[in-house]
Image (cartoon, rainbow, N blue to C red):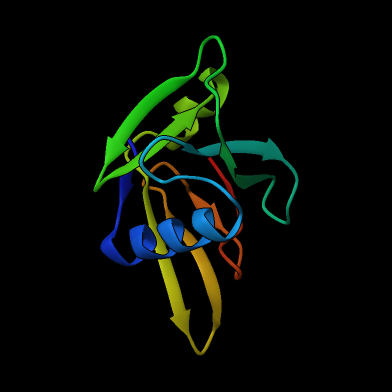
Length: 109
């Protein structure tokens, strides 16, 4: 399961509305892809449809879909939003990551 913090929820709802998505019916698609300075990087986008094999979660009123391959890397992750001095954006608190880069956008196992 993937959890969503309260600050991330507020930002997701805002950004989905700005992009023409409905947070009540549409999804946040979270995935992992090769790349980044630590080997793997996170991918986050909005989606209106599930694909075969997707895992579907809902936490804090946010519907999340994850492809089967990415799911194993993301179990137990919390999606947060940071608006601090070190930059703004979504942050993945992933207990499976052994090493993360300074920007928090990539990781390795």
